[in-house]
Amino acid sequence: MGDCLEDLYPSGTQYIFEWKFSTSTNGEVVWNGITDWAGGHIWYVTISNVSLVAAAWLDISPVGTASARITWATNFVDHVLEYATTLPASRWSTVTNSAVTIGDRLSVTMDTGPSNRFFRLRKP
Image 1 (cartoon, rainbow, N blue to C red):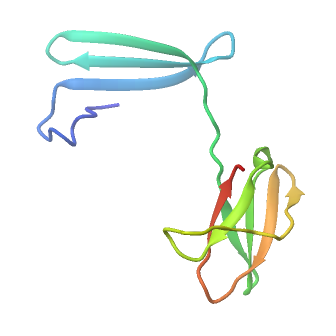
Image 2: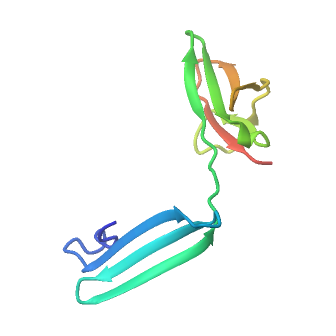
């Protein structure tokens, strides 16, 4: 909501935007947008049949002084956990520790070492 062109025109453009997502009566996602111009014009836009795709999200927490637990949602069971020691990474290595299911999360416990590790989930 607001003047989305404000970064380009700090004094304002008189264009006002407001967007909302909702669920229609048949279960599809509907995007409702209002675009106004303070000079007297108004446009109403509705876009339907939008597919929302869940993004993989890693949670990392310490376990004791020498380990870390990495968890992610079970709906990403078909993804591979990988790590790199630098970013940007020229090479990613697959984590070979077995993942266990705890509720609706997959969990891997890794030993921490002296070098940095950066993790990602990748769908092969």
